[in-house]
Length: 350
Length: 288
Image 1 (spheres, one colour):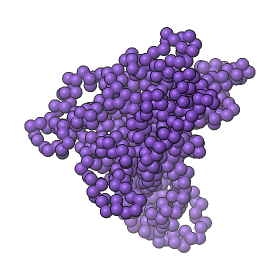
Image 2 (cartoon, rainbow over the protein chains, first blue to last red):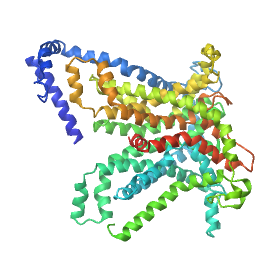
Image 3 (cartoon, each protein chain N blue to C red):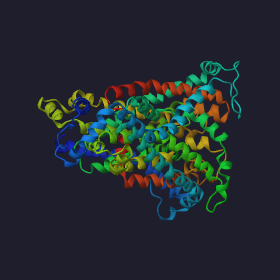
């Protein structure tokens, strides 16, 4: 629907331009303005101007738009793209001190990337990053979809439920990491105490100090924090599906489960894609969470590229090595985000 | 699910989920109110009871975090307003003004949202190590109410503004695309300049989106830890935002958990207020 409206708009605009161009008579697109005396009296001059400078109006608008977007663009561009460029250059050097890198052709090479390739810590961190991204994102989407479907059943106090499920997202990683460190505490944390209370003490566990459960515990806490986000996105997606689709499925005698699986979920594809990309960005930012819980070194079980990068660059002053890891992380993000942005562009949603 | 039984089951599930989402916070709050003896004697999620009730942890946390809260306010408010304003201007300049080749510019703006910040950390820390804001702005620190450690806050404001622009840009762009094209076109035909269209038509219409953007950006900047860790010089206690102060918060061994939890809530108060007061807009900003 939106696409149709957009293309219609485009056609109209083009039509208007050509009409003005060829006849020199101003024709407004819906005719609503034609009766306006103001337009008629000035119409002549505007039209003439338009006809003469069809091309330069274009450029003129461009010139006039520059003060709006260029300063923010330069500020953002300098800090985002300029910094990434600088980071890339640093990653090609041996920069490991507090001074500025000086260009030295003998050490300007891929040495740091080779070092990463041969570093078991790097592969371990890359693997953990991958697991975190996939498992966290997938589970968050499933939980979020379930929450959205539950809430979208015409229940009472819908707002209150939604507000509560989304609440953890408003909190800082620092806050949630502190709270979950307490939840997972072996001696007196809520999880273990509750388990013991129900005589399930043998299940109590060193959740965040034991390598087996460390990453899972982190992912669980992150799902607690962000599943509300997926719920909100899915809820918006569900509300955008016309009621007639639900009705049609019901008339066909489809069971609720079948209706969601066959009719509704496939229509939520764009919600899923959008939410997945943003959740992955959150997962990459989980550095804050890990840093508060474990400091600069979470240990092999929960070390991700983000924590490894920070450790190498800021705790060990291996700037160049840290930068190289950062570039790998950047490339990983690009392989997810690039196609997403391209598809958004194709759909005319960018 | 139309049946009564199904309805009851549905509400049971919903309330169980409420318990799941609130339990960590509830347990944290209970802990923050407990004396050390109550901490040992009661269950983590149980209230302390009258003789085990104390406000000590809250008092200590507030004292230890007050400078951080002030810094975070001084940082988050200007950074939020600046990035929202710049995002609105940029979105208008490429959405409601027609010119060729705007797509690459838009793509660069939007892609900025998805950059993993690790890719800019080293340059960022180097930049603020080289550009010494503190000495550059030396005359300022002599003025009343000014403190030398505000230089760190200025650095953070610049960084948060720059990195906030992509998301505010996207929020405003999706809003400006749905403005009535007819109305803008009419203004254009009346000879309104690009600037006066923004000033007289688009900006007044942007109020609801400004609300969403400001709320979203405020929580983002308030909750940030990474930039503060990287941009602040090591051990810069005076200029640290509340997230850094909370990370380093420590007390005696006994009071530790109570203090940590009280601190977590003290640090979370502003975003919780924003969330409770503007929950609907927060959800809207998040969903975009």
